[in-house]
Every structure is written in C-alpha cells, then in structure tokens.
Image (cartoon, rainbow, N blue to C red; front, side, top):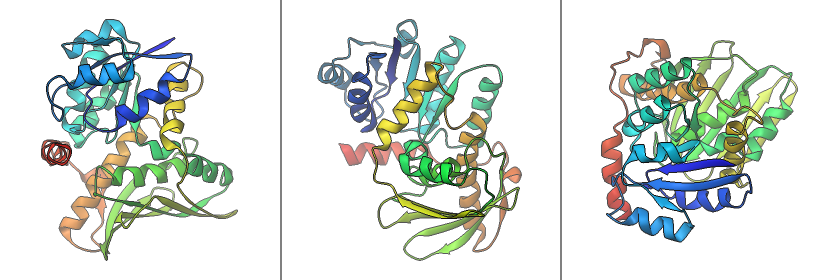
Length: 304
C-alpha cells in the first residue's frame, strides 16, 4: 500500500486528485496539512472530512511518520523547496505540483537533493496526457524537426504546461537539451522559440485563447492533437507507478528543471526585446525568478 500525504490545499488539484487516488486499491491518502497561504483556518479539517482522509496534522513534519510519499501542492512555488526539505531528509518520496519552482537557485537545490539520492518528481499533468504520449510514440525512431505547442492563461503558472507538453513529445529517450529561447512577439498571445542542441526547434504559444494543443513535424510524418483526455488521471497513474517502482516517471529532475529555465529565459528575452535570444546557461543562479508570493496573493483574492 502506497501511503500518500498532502502538504498544502491551496488549489483545486487536491480536491480533484484525491478522489482518483482513492479509487485504487494499492493507494491510500492517509493525512493532510495546510499552511494557510490561501485557505482559512479549519479548511484542512473540512477537506479531510469531505474526502475521507483519516488524519489532519498540525505541523508539516508530522506527516513524515505517516506517509511514503508527500504531494507538495502549494500554489506559492517559492515555498516548494522549503516544504520538500524535511521529506528529503527523511528519505520520503516527493511529488511537487507545477510549477516545480520559480527561480534558478531553488532548481539547483532540487537537483542537488536528487543527486544525493532523493526521489523527487513533479510538474505538469499535460506531460502525461494520452495525446502527448501518442504523438511521442508515433515519432519514436524518427528525427524531430519542429514542435508547436499552445495553451491558455498566464505566462508561468499555465505556461509551464506548454513547455512540458513539448518535453513529453520529445521524451526521456532523446538527450536533447534546450539551449536558447527567443521572444518572437505577441498578437493576442506570446510566442517563444526554443532552440535545442540537436537542431530541434519548438514554438510555444502562451496565453492563447483556449485549450491545449500540440503539433510535431518529424522525418516520418506530421502529427497533431488537441488535448481532451483525462490528464489528471493519466498523471496520477504515472506518479503512483513511479513510487511503487513499476515504471519510471516520464521526466527526470533535469528535464523538470529545464522547463522552468526555458520560461525564465523566455521572460528575459521579452525584457530585451523581440528576436533577442537568451541562452539558458547565461541565467545566473541569483537571477530574479517568477514571484510566487505575489501570485499567491492574487490567487487567494480570486478564491476568497
């Protein structure tokens, strides 16, 4: 039995994910804790009662003896590394909800823990959806030329879905790091060009009108899809299979961190002006990140 704890109940994800997890015989959501960044006092007790979770703990560390894996689901990505630390030190598995982090320093810390043996995964559910996996399978063994991916809403919190769809299409079997990002301009959406080491190029359309879509041009054909499948269920199946040792998660820590770095480089290219490429390796560890505290304040007001 895989025992899961939930740390932070900020977004709609815990309420959508826990019922799916509870359908499976080999999984139990055994405890939750909330830090109060978004929800009022007493919300964790209400959430636990509604979702048949046996325990609400008063402190984050109280989850440690109860769980095998913690889901860190703070909408403030600037808190993720702080939330993860005690579970890494206790040898527990960690899933970090998207975005993994918002700055290069936190990404370096997550990589360092992983290099020391910590089992850390996370990121976007869109990476695992049926449509992305199908396109990845259709292009196996073929050179990839161009990928176009589009998604709605804000640049970072939702934009992370778009770059992770691209990574899902590329897959774990290709060693194709992103090297530079160029802001192409805006017209009812923001467009970024991502150049990869092997010559692959991806165009990200962020803040588009609606929906998620993906198109791939490869040596063996052209493939496209609009995402309509149950991507939450697909993600959770992959997460559970990973922590039960049945199959690896479809992204390692380097790939997960690269997704954030692509958007950091894209924002810097926007600051410099249209068609000004920014190499990912030129971003300093202390460079300004995406502000998770401001995002959380706005999010709290929106759900208040």
